[in-house]
Image 1 (cartoon, rainbow, N blue to C red):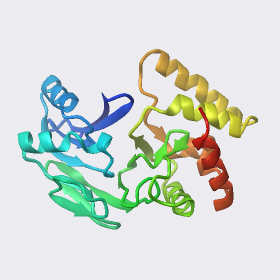
Image 2 (image 1 turned 180 degrees about the vertical axis):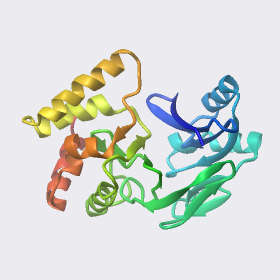
Image 3 (image 1 turned 90 degrees about the horizontal axis):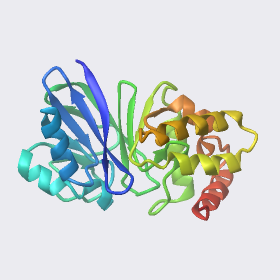
Length: 240
């Protein structure tokens, strides 16, 4: 199967990920905060929607679900612990997700912190992690606790370094600005900032990153203790 993964820009800085099977011109959509950009993408690329994957309940990841579900009548899969209208299947840690037309399996990982029910989908070196792990950052802790989020990030960090990280927002420049403050002597962060600025100057996405890159430049993955992580997250909450 020939697979392409493309971000569909939505709202202010969201990415709706499109996982395209070029063999049969079908596509999976991850976290559709809007329906219109998805339908435009389907039309432009002559694709058939095969399913929708949701990572958590926040509106900017789910507002397109009702419209897309009615129009396309496809499976809508999301976290069991987040109550999301329109799901056809609720999944939890250890569940496997198979969609017709896509001959690979997503493993479901529960990754609480940003929300209590947040999940990620992992398969073949691809990690779709919503608002939990960002490029050079992590999500705000709205429902969980710092120890939960710290444990979640350690869980994600245990995946292979060549895993591609598909997060849901274009926050990378701002996250790297903070990372440079947190680790002023980390030359790898500075090199990454230069690369990301060049991409953004060309209006290109900074994503995906790799988990190895995150381990080298993301201060939240470089914390050794919960206390260190908690202090860093509080600092980032106040950072502008």
